[in-house]
Length: 97
Image (cartoon, rainbow, N blue to C red; front, side, top):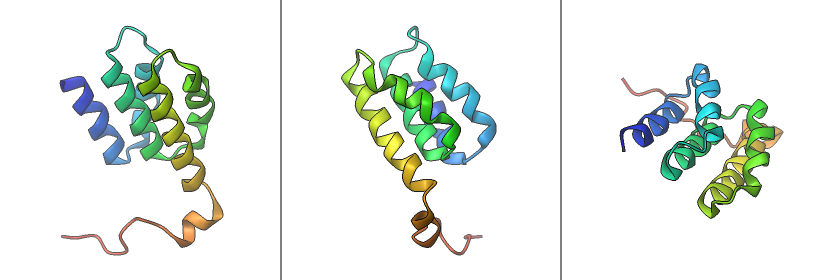
C-alpha cells in the first residue's frame, strides 16, 4: 500500500520531476497492479503530453484495471493540453494560506 500511496501523492503534488519515475512504475510488470494503476492515474494528473505514447501503449495491457486507468488518464491529458482547458481550469484561482 505504501507504493500505491506514494504514486498517488506524486500525482497530486504536480511535481513534474516525478514523471519519469511514474512512467517506470507503469512499465514495470513486477509492480502490483494497484501500484501501476496509481502511477497511470498520477501521470494523467500531472498533465504532461509527453506521457501520452506510454499511456496509449498500455491501453492494450492484459489488466483491465490498467487499460481503463490509462484510458481515463489519456482523456485527462488531452483535456489538460487543450485550448478549452485554459478557460475552464479546475485549478483554484486563489491559493489558501
